[in-house]
Image (cartoon, rainbow, N blue to C red; front, side, top):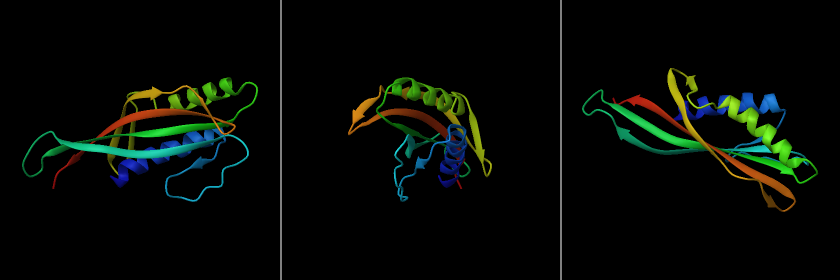
Length: 136
C-alpha cells in the first residue's frame, strides 16, 4: 500500500510544482497560506482476489481526493478551472504511475462545483485508481 500511496503522492508533488501551489498532506502540519493551495487525501477502498492460492493476484482499488482551495475574489472560478485543467492533465484516465515496480492506474474522475466556505472557494477532484499485487 505504501508504494501505491508514494506513486500518487509523487505525481501530486509534480502537479503542485507545476501550479506553484503548496499542498496540505494528511497527518502533517500545515499553515494555510493567505492565497490558494491544495489538499491531498489518499483513500484505499479495498482488495479483491483475481486468482486464488499461493501466488494469487489481488486487485487493490481506492481514490485520491484533491481539494482546490482559493480565496474568494473576482475571477476565482476561472482560477479554479485552470487548476482543474492542470490536475486533470497530471492524472489523466489511463495514466500508469510506477513506484518501486508497483503500477497504479488512474481509472476515472469526478468533480464538484466550488462551494463557499468561510471566505474560501473549495472544489473537489476525485481520482479513482487501481493496482495489482501478488499474494505471498
